[in-house]
Image 1 (tube, one colour):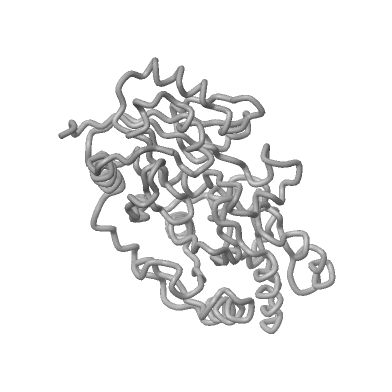
Image 2 (tube, one colour):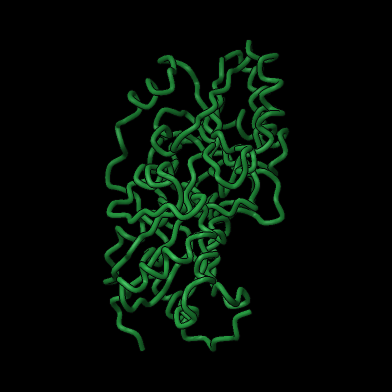
Length: 356
């Protein structure tokens, strides 16, 4: 049995919405193949660090250019180590990681937040391989880096603060929103890019209300260029703000939110749940999401699907006939640190298979 006071090294490869060392074209961030640690994952890690249900020592290493370090800090993570490997790519961080492991001593787990952050673990000394674990930032699946068949799905849980932030006025000023302007934000990050075309078409339907709507979309959104080509034609109905920066600080400025991930083979359930909780923590408005994407305990207006027509109907209902204020978020039965601790213990207790 290992001691209850775990020592865990977290590896991150965080990226702001349009900063990419993967390719010259920032649109590549709209594909799950970029495998970066999304902004939602950073807030999930902060929740683990803030949870005192179990004693643990957490060491956080952020990999990438200086923007990655700043983006990590913007999510509220303090005392983070930062390193810029060759070409600022996590895949080239093997030597950096080996030097850090020599200084840190024994660890219970090396925890990579995303497949790209797991790449340097494969280049570390073999004695660390049994401890290498990877969290999928889209689905919350924690698995052995060298044996994905051994996995556990982590619950998505962010502790709700006692008081909601009163930063609405400052956030609206930052977005240059008028006092009575209706703003709807698309929730997502590089791990769960929203579909800009679906959101664009859904926003157009709001014209039947006769009230101007402003749509805020993150710069990592999929199909962004295609959507932007049509926006100027509909400028008299709604406008779009392309937000190139951390999304969480501007949530208080908005009146409603939409979770509309781009179509991928893998449902981004973990990332969607994290963003939904961040919305309810920071803003009072309704949340619209495709049916079966969010856990039942997170209050939201379900759309029948992520198709633009279904999103439009749910958005219109939420904005024109708002339901009573949603009940407080139900607490998950297991605190974030406890869930992670138990999952690591279980995976490390399983028989080790030969690494390939």
